[in-house]
Image (cartoon, rainbow, N blue to C red; front, side, top):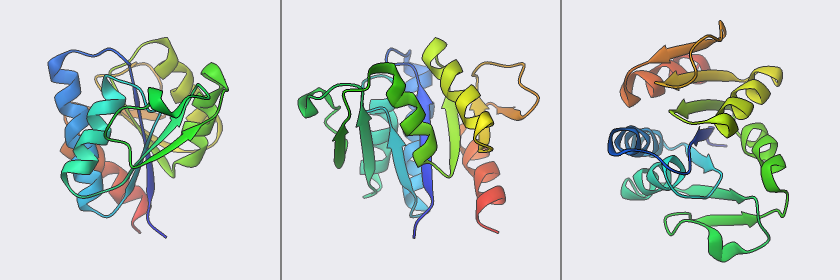
Length: 151
Protein backbone atom coordinates (compact mmCIF):
# COMPACT_ATOMS: atom_id res chain seq x y z
CA UNK A 1 0.00 0.00 0.00
CA UNK A 2 1.49 3.39 -0.95
CA UNK A 3 2.21 6.14 1.53
CA UNK A 4 -0.62 8.65 1.71
CA UNK A 5 0.57 12.23 2.11
CA UNK A 6 -1.86 14.96 3.11
CA UNK A 7 -0.87 18.35 1.71
CA UNK A 8 -2.61 21.25 3.40
CA UNK A 9 -2.56 24.99 2.80
CA UNK A 10 -4.63 27.94 1.74
CA UNK A 11 -7.24 27.96 -1.01
CA UNK A 12 -5.67 31.25 -2.06
CA UNK A 13 -1.88 31.37 -2.33
CA UNK A 14 0.81 33.43 -3.97
CA UNK A 15 2.98 32.15 -6.83
CA UNK A 16 5.87 31.13 -4.57
CA UNK A 17 3.62 29.14 -2.25
CA UNK A 18 1.86 27.47 -5.17
CA UNK A 19 5.24 26.55 -6.70
CA UNK A 20 6.28 24.94 -3.41
CA UNK A 21 3.00 23.01 -3.23
CA UNK A 22 3.40 21.89 -6.85
CA UNK A 23 6.88 20.57 -6.04
CA UNK A 24 5.58 18.73 -2.95
CA UNK A 25 2.92 17.00 -5.06
CA UNK A 26 5.38 16.17 -7.83
CA UNK A 27 8.08 14.84 -5.50
CA UNK A 28 5.56 12.78 -3.54
CA UNK A 29 4.15 11.25 -6.74
CA UNK A 30 7.66 10.48 -8.00
CA UNK A 31 8.08 8.37 -4.85
CA UNK A 32 4.83 6.55 -5.61
CA UNK A 33 2.93 8.29 -2.82
CA UNK A 34 -0.76 9.17 -2.96
CA UNK A 35 -1.41 12.92 -2.49
CA UNK A 36 -4.47 13.92 -0.47
CA UNK A 37 -5.84 17.48 -0.37
CA UNK A 38 -9.01 19.35 0.42
CA UNK A 39 -9.66 19.56 -3.31
CA UNK A 40 -9.90 23.33 -3.70
CA UNK A 41 -7.68 25.94 -5.28
CA UNK A 42 -4.40 27.48 -4.20
CA UNK A 43 -2.10 25.01 -2.43
CA UNK A 44 -4.55 22.17 -2.93
CA UNK A 45 -4.76 22.61 -6.70
CA UNK A 46 -1.01 23.15 -7.01
CA UNK A 47 -0.16 19.98 -5.06
CA UNK A 48 -2.69 18.01 -7.12
CA UNK A 49 -1.27 19.45 -10.36
CA UNK A 50 2.23 18.50 -9.21
CA UNK A 51 1.15 14.93 -8.51
CA UNK A 52 -0.58 14.70 -11.90
CA UNK A 53 2.53 16.05 -13.66
CA UNK A 54 4.46 13.06 -12.32
CA UNK A 55 1.69 10.64 -13.30
CA UNK A 56 0.66 10.29 -9.67
CA UNK A 57 -2.75 10.30 -8.07
CA UNK A 58 -4.28 13.16 -6.10
CA UNK A 59 -7.38 12.64 -3.97
CA UNK A 60 -9.68 15.59 -3.27
CA UNK A 61 -11.72 15.43 -0.07
CA UNK A 62 -14.28 18.17 -0.60
CA UNK A 63 -16.19 20.21 1.97
CA UNK A 64 -19.26 20.19 -0.33
CA UNK A 65 -21.53 17.54 -1.79
CA UNK A 66 -20.77 18.86 -5.27
CA UNK A 67 -17.94 16.98 -6.96
CA UNK A 68 -17.68 19.67 -9.63
CA UNK A 69 -16.13 22.01 -7.03
CA UNK A 70 -12.90 19.96 -7.05
CA UNK A 71 -9.84 21.32 -8.78
CA UNK A 72 -9.31 19.75 -12.23
CA UNK A 73 -6.12 17.91 -11.22
CA UNK A 74 -7.74 15.54 -8.71
CA UNK A 75 -7.88 11.95 -9.93
CA UNK A 76 -10.31 10.89 -7.20
CA UNK A 77 -12.97 13.21 -5.81
CA UNK A 78 -14.76 12.53 -2.53
CA UNK A 79 -17.62 14.96 -1.80
CA UNK A 80 -18.36 14.99 1.94
CA UNK A 81 -20.78 17.82 2.68
CA UNK A 82 -18.85 18.29 5.94
CA UNK A 83 -17.74 21.90 5.49
CA UNK A 84 -14.64 22.67 7.53
CA UNK A 85 -15.04 19.38 9.38
CA UNK A 86 -13.63 17.74 6.24
CA UNK A 87 -10.24 19.02 7.45
CA UNK A 88 -10.23 16.19 9.97
CA UNK A 89 -10.79 13.68 7.16
CA UNK A 90 -8.00 15.18 5.03
CA UNK A 91 -5.54 14.90 7.91
CA UNK A 92 -6.71 11.48 9.13
CA UNK A 93 -6.39 10.02 5.62
CA UNK A 94 -2.69 10.84 5.42
CA UNK A 95 0.18 8.94 6.96
CA UNK A 96 1.87 12.31 7.36
CA UNK A 97 1.15 15.98 6.61
CA UNK A 98 3.02 18.72 4.81
CA UNK A 99 1.62 22.21 5.41
CA UNK A 100 2.49 24.81 2.79
CA UNK A 101 1.77 28.37 3.89
CA UNK A 102 -1.87 28.65 4.86
CA UNK A 103 -4.30 30.43 7.11
CA UNK A 104 -6.60 29.37 9.94
CA UNK A 105 -7.88 26.24 8.20
CA UNK A 106 -4.28 25.11 7.82
CA UNK A 107 -3.65 25.89 11.47
CA UNK A 108 -6.60 23.67 12.41
CA UNK A 109 -5.28 20.88 10.18
CA UNK A 110 -1.84 21.08 11.78
CA UNK A 111 -3.37 20.88 15.25
CA UNK A 112 -5.55 17.92 14.26
CA UNK A 113 -2.58 16.13 12.70
CA UNK A 114 -0.52 16.59 15.87
CA UNK A 115 -3.45 15.37 17.99
CA UNK A 116 -3.57 12.24 15.80
CA UNK A 117 0.18 11.67 16.21
CA UNK A 118 1.01 12.35 12.55
CA UNK A 119 4.40 13.58 11.40
CA UNK A 120 3.99 17.21 10.26
CA UNK A 121 6.43 19.32 8.27
CA UNK A 122 5.77 22.97 7.47
CA UNK A 123 7.02 25.01 4.53
CA UNK A 124 6.74 28.64 5.61
CA UNK A 125 3.67 27.66 7.60
CA UNK A 126 2.57 28.46 11.15
CA UNK A 127 5.81 28.45 13.15
CA UNK A 128 5.71 27.91 16.89
CA UNK A 129 4.73 24.27 17.14
CA UNK A 130 7.53 22.32 18.79
CA UNK A 131 6.45 19.14 16.97
CA UNK A 132 6.37 20.72 13.49
CA UNK A 133 9.70 20.97 11.73
CA UNK A 134 9.81 24.05 9.51
CA UNK A 135 11.72 23.87 6.23
CA UNK A 136 12.02 26.29 3.31
CA UNK A 137 11.49 24.02 0.30
CA UNK A 138 9.58 21.03 -0.98
CA UNK A 139 12.59 18.74 -1.37
CA UNK A 140 13.49 19.12 2.31
CA UNK A 141 9.87 18.57 3.37
CA UNK A 142 9.41 15.41 1.32
CA UNK A 143 12.83 14.07 2.37
CA UNK A 144 11.96 14.57 6.02
CA UNK A 145 8.64 12.77 5.67
CA UNK A 146 10.37 9.97 3.74
CA UNK A 147 12.92 9.57 6.53
CA UNK A 148 10.09 9.10 9.02
CA UNK A 149 7.78 6.88 6.92
CA UNK A 150 9.98 4.85 4.60
CA UNK A 151 11.87 3.01 7.35
